[in-house]
Image (cartoon, rainbow, N blue to C red; front, side):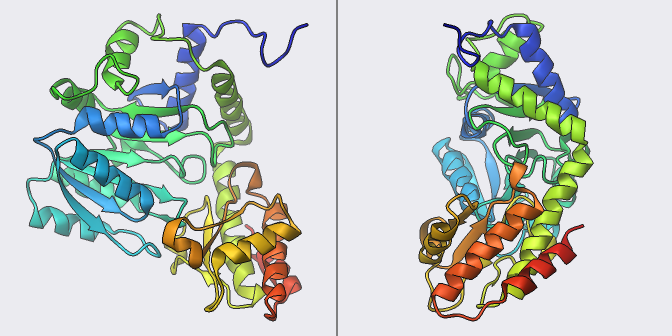
Length: 366
């Protein structure tokens, strides 16, 4: 008995390469694109371990938990790391980046998260990229949460290592990811004696055995279902048009911010300024005296499939995250989340106005 998900013909090198080319078009890049066979943490860590070492002086920007992780990896590689941390309810600025360069002119590597879905903020990468180019540093960007929800343009922004994942705004699988690599990033890796080789983390293996070999022989058997799912979500984005997909995500973010403010009960946007708010997910601060994780649990009791979660770690007490990405970047999902939050707040004896929230959300949707 055959099964449509199991009895599939092998995914050959030509089709693998064609999917990489579609990712390159999504990013509007002429850089090499490598699809990596695992969740985005694989290329995120692999790129740092390939490009950084004991001689590296890094500026690590922290606007959420992933920035903290990158600093840990850089230190583990032996790099000298200067952290630039900003409050999680805001974004870093190009002026702050330039100030860090002025204080530490030896910086030659910059790590940044574009959009921190965990905290709901997004950083102005185009402006930061200009500052990094002036410094001449290698620019490493985590665009996992932002790709599909807002522009991601490695070439135009001077990004040397740009990692994406399909599981958020692209609406695809979690088990496959990709990275675009500039020529100078490849040169930095090749000159690094500590870069992983003959390792699942090794990007240089893909460069030498896949790209330099004309993309004719894969290093190992690809994750076939994930690759086919990635191809399908790229096709869906191409059919809708990337601008339309990004507009849908921005509209969802605007609608949640407006609806939550009109709902009442003390909810307010966690990221203060709209310009700093990520289109992929909206974070909300709960009223004093309530615990975010408890409020989310009550909301999910009324609508178990609503894409709501509490913040991680210490943020579980004060932050709610509305994950309006992929198929959930829709008016229907926004309405459901606001309704569930209204039910939860009312259960704590707070006055809410669900109809006002719905009208405000609809009015904000572009």
